Length: 244
Ligand SMILES: Nc1ncnc2c1ncn2[C@@H]1O[C@H](COP(=O)(O)OP(=O)(O)OP(=O)(O)O)[C@@H](O)[C@H]1O
Image (tube, rainbow, N blue to C red; front, side, top):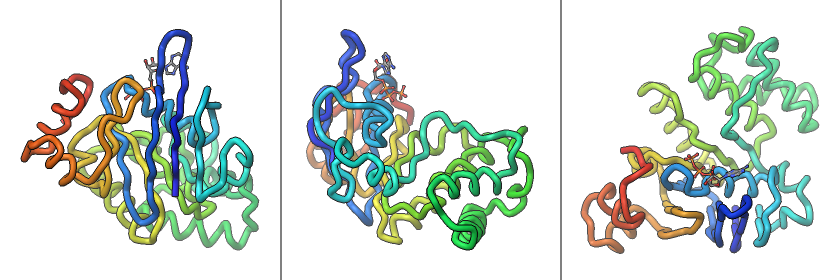
C-alpha cells in the first residue's frame, strides 16, 4: 500500500506539487491522471525516493520513505519516465544486473527472469542486445527489470507511452495480472481512455493538486456526466493537455 500525505515540491516559483494526498491500495490499480505539467512525474519521483519533498510524507506498506528509504525502495518496482537500458547488454542481462543489485542469488535470479520473460512474452528478444530494440521491446525489458525482486508495489510512469495497440493491450493485461496477485499498482497517464479502461481508482491531478479521487462510477456521479471523458473535462476545467 502506498500513502502520500500532503506532499509539496516547488521549483523556484513553480509549485509543481502543491499538497497531494492519496492512497493506492493493494489488489487495486490506481491511475494518476492529469494534463501535461500537472505534477504527476514529480509526485512519482518523490514517492520512489529520487527527489525529496519540501513537505509531506510518503509511506510504503507503512514505512516512512524519509526514515527508511532503503526498505521503501525494496518494496517498490519502478518503471520511471526515463527507461535507460544498457544497450551493450542483452535484455536478460539487463534484468539480471538489476536483480544482483537487489541482492538476489543466482537461482532466484534465474527463476524470476524466466518467469518475467514468459509473462511479458519476450522469449524471442531475451538474448538479443537491447541496442536497436523497438519502443515496445524496451518498455518490456524495463518492466521486467523493475519487477525482478518481486516487489509488492509497482509504480509506472506513462507505461504505454509509444506502444502500439497490441503492445498496449498486452501491457494492460499484464498490469491486471499484477493487481490480481494482490499487488498495489499505481501508474500515471494523461490518456483518459487508458485510465478508464484499467483503473479501479482514479486520482485526478491538476496544477499540483488532487481535484478528484474515486472509482470511474464515483467520478461520473460526482460530476453528473454519464461519459467519463466529459467527467474528466468538467473536473479539470478543460480538456487541454489530456489525450483521449
Ligand atoms: N526539475 C525541474 N525543474 C524545474 N521545473 C520542473 C522540474 N520538474 C518539473 N518541473 C515543473 O513542474 C511542473 C510539473 O511537472 P511534472 O513533470 O511533474 O508534470 P507531469 O504531470 O508529469 O507532466 P507530463 O504529463 O507532461 O509529463 C511543470 O510545470 C514542470 O515544468
